[in-house]
Structures are given as C-alpha cells and as structure tokens.
Amino acid sequence: MFPRLFKSSYAPLVPWVVVAALLAAALGGTHALMVTPAHERLAVLEADWAAARQALARRLEARQTRKDLAQILTVLPGQRDFARLPLAISEIAQRDRVVLPSLTYTLGKTDEGLATKAVLQGTVTGQYEDLRRFIHHLEVSDRLLLFVEDLSVGRSSEVKGERKDKLVTVNLRLATFIREESRPGRALKASIE
Image 1: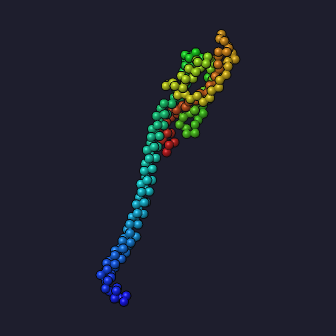
Image 2: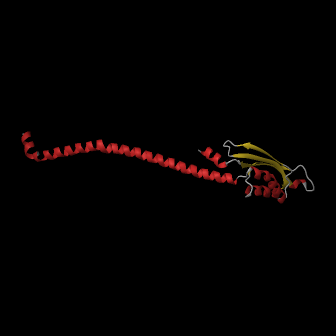
Image 3: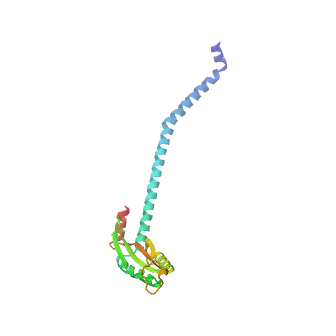
C-alpha cells in the first residue's frame, strides 16, 4: 500500500525535491567556498582600513602639534630677550606704584631640551590694590610670557613714610621659558619623532 501511494500521489514531486536538495547543496557549497572567505577578507580589510585611518589621524595630529609647538617656541623669549625681562618687570612695578627691591632668578633645563625654565623670585611691597594691579599686568602682558607659580601674602614689616597697616608684602615666584637659540626646528623635530 505504501509504495502504491508513494507512486501515485507524490511521484511528480520527487524531481522537484531532488532539484531543491541539489540547489540547497550548491547554495551551502557556494556559501562555504566563496561567501565565508569573502566575509573574512572583508573583516581583515576593514581592520586594516581602520588601522590606516588611525595612523593617518596620528600623523596629522603630530604634524599639528609640531606646528603648534613651533609657534609657541617663537613666542618664548630668547636668551637676549630674557636679559631685559627683570627690567621690564621693574618698570611694571614702578608704573603700578609697588616696590620691588630685588629680583633673583634661576635657570634649569627641561627634559625635552627645547627650552630652559627660568624662575624669578622677589618680594613686592605696596598697597593691596596696587599689588593686585601689578600681578594682573604681569599675567596679561603681551610682551612678557610669565606664569605665577607661587604667591604668599603678608603684612609689611618695614614702613618708610606710609602707614604700616596699609602696606602688604607679597613673596612672588614667577616662571617663564627661554627658547634655545640653536636651531629650535631641528630639536623640535627630533623630540616629536
């Protein structure tokens, strides 16, 4: 009974089932032989492309950093300009009516060797508003590139002609960097690369 039923009702579907099985096998074989390796190659190429984009971004960033650093180095005072710096600070102190009896400085090399760090220290005495104006002028000056590193405030112990309670003494520590005069471009290129 079963063979007769198979022959009579399902006989026309057998070739279609065989064709469907062959097509499924061909599809599976094509997928295994062509699509899967293509996906793997695509993944490798996408990873290489992402790595190349990152390398390009780093190179562009390094180039921009090199330009920015070169621009900063041109703004820094040279060794000849540094000799005039204490005089310029004294002129600002005189203009702002504060007393700056002496200004000492120390020089120290930075790790990169692109600039020398100069630290200027001194005691400034004057009225509070004059001292505030003096420090403000030091910080915003276009021709002086100074940073206030340390500041300690106290009452003045010495008075000459003014009331003692109005005077304030400030121990001031300023820092700046002095550009190296010997070919800053070559040192800059060597330090970045």
